[in-house]
Length: 160
Image 1 (cartoon, helix red, strand yellow):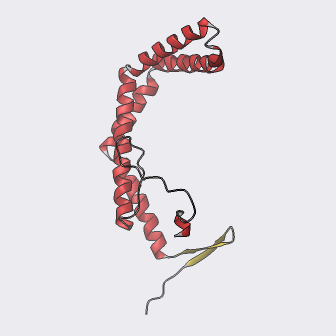
Image 2: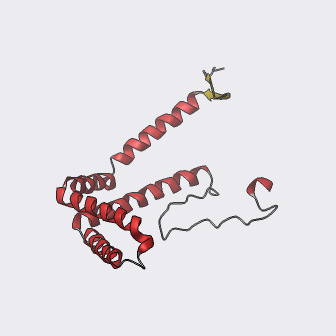
Image 3: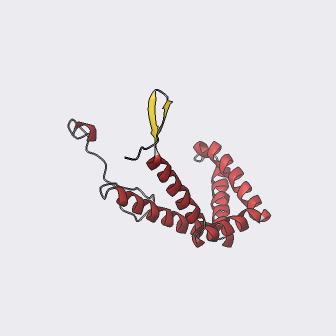
């Protein structure tokens, strides 16, 4: 009869039981993370991010946009009474448009979406391996969303 070794820790008045299964899960998670970081999608994202951050003129444009946005946010309530606030809004939207059509910004956003889709697929596969009833909200705009729970007595999950 083999004897399993286990370590027991107390953490915030909860007993944490660590045995070989826990260590195997931890090892599997580390291997999964390493394999994920080796994917082409991740390297593509890192390249896009590096190019995005290395472009000094783009970073200055972003800083200018953020400053304009702060100014507009502070004066937004007075737009009906002050025409210069309307002009500031037009300038803000023009600056936003310039940022949106910048090639490095477009590449960065596409790489982010590809990476998010890959993470969503991976998360969904992990959840389904545990139970097909687990819902994963991926945050993607066209992905299925779980309907909200009905309000009222007896409709709460804990009450069922």
